[in-house]
Amino acid sequence: MKFAIVSLVALTSFISSVPTTSPNAGSSKKNMIMMVSDGFGPASETLARAYVQQSGKYPPNFMSVIDRILVGTSRTRSADSFITDSAPGAQCFSTGTKTYNNAIGVSPDYVPLGTNMEAAHRAGYKTGLVVKSYIADATPSVFAAHAANRAMQDLISEQMAGLVPEIGRNVDLMFGGGRCTFIGNATKGSCRTDSYDLFPVMQKNGWTNIFNRSEFNALTNTPKLPLSGLFTLGNVPYAIDYPDNDVPSLVEMAKKALDILYTASKDSAKGFYIMIEGSRIDHAGHSNDAGAHIREILEYWETVAMVSEFVDAHPETAMISTSDHECGGLTLGRDNNYFLYPLTYQKQTKSHEVICTQLLAANVTARGDLVTNVIAPKYLGVANVTTKATSKILAASNTSECYMALADALAIPANLAWTSLGHTGVDVNVYAKGNCVEDVKGNMENTDIGNWITKYLEVDLAPVTEAIKKTNVFQYAFKRPNTTYVFEY
Ligand SMILES: *[C@@H]1O[C@H](CO)[C@@H](O)[C@H](O)[C@H]1NC(C)=O
Ligand SMILES: *[C@@H]1O[C@H](CO)[C@@H](O)[C@H](O)[C@H]1NC(C)=O
Ligand SMILES: *[C@@H]1O[C@H](CO)[C@@H](O)[C@H](O)[C@H]1NC(C)=O
Ligand SMILES: *[C@@H]1O[C@H](CO)[C@@H](O)[C@H](O)[C@H]1NC(C)=O
Ligand SMILES: *[C@@H]1O[C@H](CO)[C@@H](O)[C@H](O)[C@H]1NC(C)=O
Ligand SMILES: *[C@@H]1O[C@H](CO)[C@@H](O)[C@H](O)[C@H]1NC(C)=O
Ligand SMILES: [Zn+2]
View (cartoon, rainbow, N blue to C red):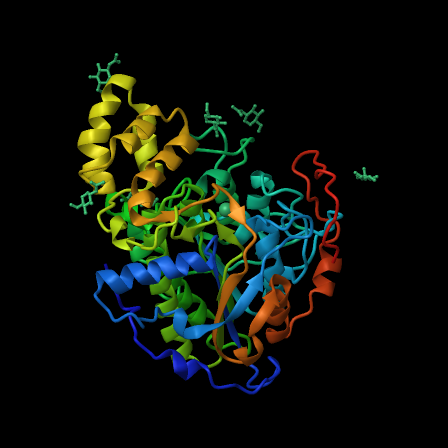
């Protein structure tokens, strides 16, 4: 494990007040790096910090790379629920407006809304998306697609690839997973409902498409753009599972993307705008998998450290890091016990996702051996899992039950708890650094972040909204549930 992230800067150096400046001040060339730690709540930062502090035997005032740039908190509710999902959560960052759960770049009335990334691309910025999820998943999509529901993955992929004339192409570079929504249903591994093969059409439209580690390693800083690198059919594996998978990590993808976009915009009056997402911090919350969650966070910290160095070297750059919402309802301390043992997770070697796939595929006779001889000692890293925990794992009849059973096996000794397999509504932390970020601070609405980016980039969303208004946002007939709009915006 790499700890380039480690630093012990004293908390007090962040208490002095800073003058407020308009994001439009300063030189005209600007880069924007928006980082989204999906499903990363404040308890997750505390857990990861305690884990590193204890495993590295650092003093108790240890600061992670993001602790050092904490500037405030963000409220996360969507237009129709106190508990948001990633789609409207991230749309606040791309359009500065709230919408209903599951919406992709549309208003509550299904009107496609121009995004700051689309506006930036039209203004001459180079643009990029780097994620560990499907590239057509909610967070990346809301920057460059418009659909009534996040499940409309076929349509969203076509829009992301710039194949829908009403929108045009707005993305110069995309790295991540989710190749399956780009390949027709006649090909093995496809997850499209139709036979449309996007890659050949993209290639005809000028895209460079790469698919594996060796092609990634061979990339120079000046590949022909637009460039897509979708390295897995589904999600990019969890960091904890990297040893079994030869794929570029988040930090590798993000570093390469910065080098490429920086080089491509070097001689231009405009800079670049990239969104980098630690997508699977969220997924590990959904599977109540603290071991995988911690490793995703450490990988995210490493990415922030890399970005932070870029910002230091290129003062025309701003970076913001925040979350769309918390996930899992993680809490530290449980059952009236006053202790926390984060190092309980130190010897976990595989994600709940991998473990449960293997467990549920095994027949009932084989499971006992598997749990006692493999899962407990090798994957969870505990020789003495209680019989109560073991029987709960053995009794699991589906993935959710398996996740919760595995969670208990370590969460009880660690003395932490998950309260949900879904999202929660707590405020999340906001981190920022670089060009003009002095007024990104305090307790904010998620929409404030998107509005700040739009203002910082000096772009106007209204003309984009006007230009794309004829875009079809329905892959199939859809009507959102008639929820009462408790929080009207
Ligand atoms: C594949 O897509 C075609 C339309 O492009 C459709 O007619 C067919 O039913 C699909 N096949 C499967 C197995 O989904
Ligand atoms: C990577 O992709 C290229 C181009 O599709 C292919 O020629 C090469 O064999 C692949 N390499 C591996 C290791 O799969
Ligand atoms: C169960 O799985 C084990 C290990 O894979 C195998 O040896 C055994 O034959 C299987 N038993 C049944 C009833 O399928
Ligand atoms: C399991 O083993 C560890 C390490 O030896 C020990 O600290 C812990 O108390 C044991 N837990 C149980 C439930 O026996
Ligand atoms: C898993 O199984 C339990 C018990 O049969 C059931 O209550 C639950 O709804 C199932 N969950 C899923 C996601 O299928
Ligand atoms: C939605 O539901 C509310 C009350 O539940 C009702 O008053 C309203 O007419 C409904 N709206 C639509 C468009 O169906
Ligand atoms: Zn989620």
